[in-house]
Image (tube, rainbow over all chains, first blue to last red; front, top):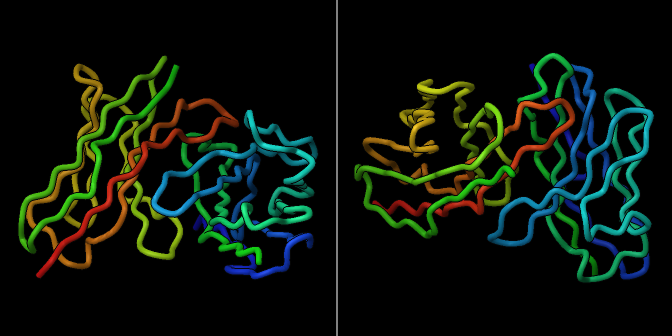
Length: 116
Length: 113
């Protein structure tokens, strides 16, 4: 149990377009989902925390108008990179927690975004 | 505040060598501790965890013991394999609802045959 999926697994887009990444908890209800960004050979940087039905909480330095997060249900959160530019190219990873085991996060496989 | 410090890599070993990757933490309260592994091009996989002092997490030959007195959670394996080549992340959970894990910077392990 506790499987998290992401879609797409990789995407290539043109500069100026928007890209939506989905994060789903497949077999549990996720009270909280997290979005991370990882640059090559670096650690995970927390971008935002999202709770179902409420606005996401963004980390300092993360542009909320650039990275739109929607947590519409207990099993789905989406990250939309708006007006993407090459510097947005990165590996985006989501994770989810369950209400009864909030000290344990389950990670998705990641989405590789390349902006041309 | 909460933080995790990992030894700098890369770590390069021959097959069957002994592995230690150091991890220390600072935390308020009583955190849970984790080791995650990331293989090239993939997401993170939980390797092992410990939720209280003196707990030992183990999996696939890897072990780590939660040492409160030294605020450490060092990862060890007695005999590494080429397939263990990956990036290893030490992480801490403050055990508060809605709070993300705090990661170390990661240590790259390269094992040669």
